[in-house]
Length: 262
Image 1 (tube, helix red, strand yellow):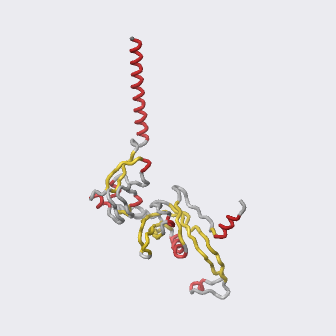
Image 2: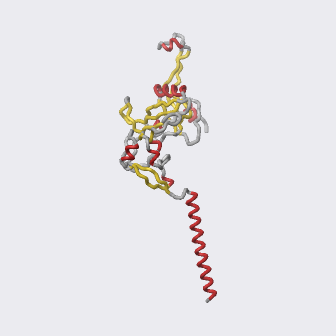
């Protein structure tokens, strides 16, 4: 009987030690994961329109904190209500939506480069795009994009002096060279400073994307000319990957590639 009691006591002690070991393991995992498997994120309790001052929304109780699993937290999600103070909504925020810093602009303090954080030797230039050509609506502030431009039935005049060209005419000995349809890389890597989804422009009553890009002066003129004379497309770059300046691609290049032996 004494032996049996000793066995039971040892078994109980082992059970206690096993429980303690599991407890310590779980606490260690929680510590490695930041102490919790969820993150407290600031969400909108009501629809917040473009241009709304977040200080007024806070005073009106229009935001609250809610816990989300870590893998469902939006990129750039606001986790402290202090991040909203002195800020303005640059895009509509729906009730129940996690508030992202990409939807905020303005600050009580002006960092280097102004409120938009314009890089040195760059300018902030705003363009209006159709949603598909602006990255399908997924491009956010802080992303980097490659700017492409497509031109249809283009041609150049060879042998015309600059003076005649500026007067809108060319000398008799000039020749016109057809380039056809082609796509070029205008700027391989551009930082996005601001995005306004669903904007209405003065020249277009349909919803478009207003995007402010950080461009060097010579690149800005190139993008402006490309948008005026062709169609500009933005390609979203993966994080930490630089854009690539690829050679122009013509319609004939595409056909030749399709017909080339595999």
